[in-house]
Image (cartoon, rainbow, N blue to C red):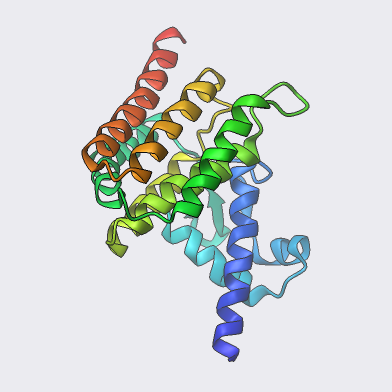
Length: 219
């Protein structure tokens, strides 16, 4: 029972620290310490330590010798490399997942995507970061889980964690297109159209890649 409690606390700490990183509260390049995080999250240092090791393993934290752990500064080259691997893996995962994702999960994703398209902005006139990330996680993560290959799901999840540092606030022009692409993927998954799901996923990730390249070209 104690071991299960420790795991649960470590996962809670992991999710909270991950949210600090992805929300920008913990900026790229910032040093993180067990003591400060324990105070911020009102948790003991043991689950914090376990969570930091998990995030280091996913590549979101980088060990800087005796200085401790630093939030990774994602270079555009790192992002493009991770995206290229996702282009190789996620279409196949979508093909395998077609017809195997729970109907309730797909229905909820469809409803949430349509809501985002109808009310896409937060108080600052930007895509609502938390809602977009939640839907994105549930779709891509659900596809990985439904593909029936735990190692594939783990690799995809790790790569996505790394690329999520670059989100729709960096590419607001992709917001509506991303929602519509996700809706098409959901439809193919629901109807068991594996080849279509794979192609739609391939197109979706290629469009993200093209948007990044286009932004760099204009810069």
